[in-house]
Image (tube, rainbow over all chains, first blue to last red; front, top):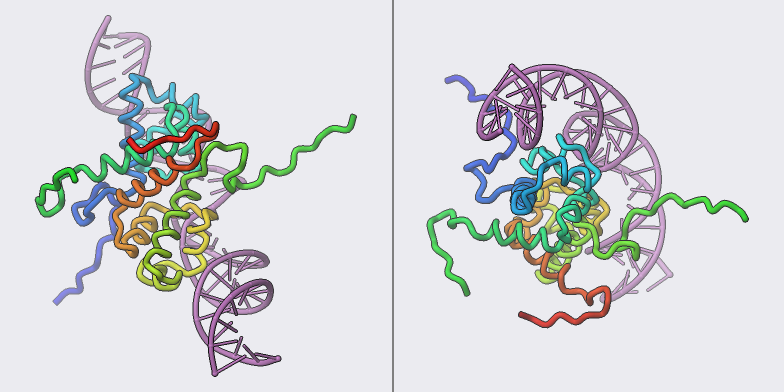
Length: 107
Length: 107
DNA sequence: TCTGCACTCTGCTGTCGGCAGAACGCTGCA
DNA sequence: TGCAGCGTTCTGCCGACAGCAGAGTGCAGA
């Protein structure tokens, strides 16, 4: 019997082992959605927010944990408050088909 | 006229120069509120979440940026999803008396 | 082909996440 | 009064990483 060596746990990328995405993934997706809605480029938002383009790309793709200050700056560059961003992120997170297939009707 | 030397900028603690708290402050406050609502101690939640008591204290008080994984773990220890936590945080952030005194009625 | 855009890779460095041990402050109770 | 319980602060540690810059890649459209 060989010992099973656990592989190094991969960084979650909406891993099937996890019922919901991580915060950085969810908020990043929302930031990208908001940017797309405004038909703006990475460089536009990054410049206004005062961060690098590469970094904003990584934030949007959930690869980096933005500090609260950076989050506020990026949200501000999209004319959003952190509250609005959190609310929209939460709404989108709460909307996917439930893990066990249960459909949740509006209260 | 003496030159005014700017003091080292204090870490935001709902600084009057900022219209809204930072994400870490807001979500920390919400975590504390949820814990209090359950009449639980720091140690109870910290143990279930797998973090230290001191650290949870700092997270709740907005002193540290919890990673998305830690955030999920603490939320889970309070039987919340990240979506629920974000939603509640957002709701509370959006509820304070508006900066210019405008009262916002429920939609 | 070239340009524009987004993304990846590599490397860097100062900051900090998260911890542990120790100590402090406050409250309530015997 | 002393003590226990709870939360917080302080100090120090160290590995991780935020955030950056330069360079390169891939794709789509003109």
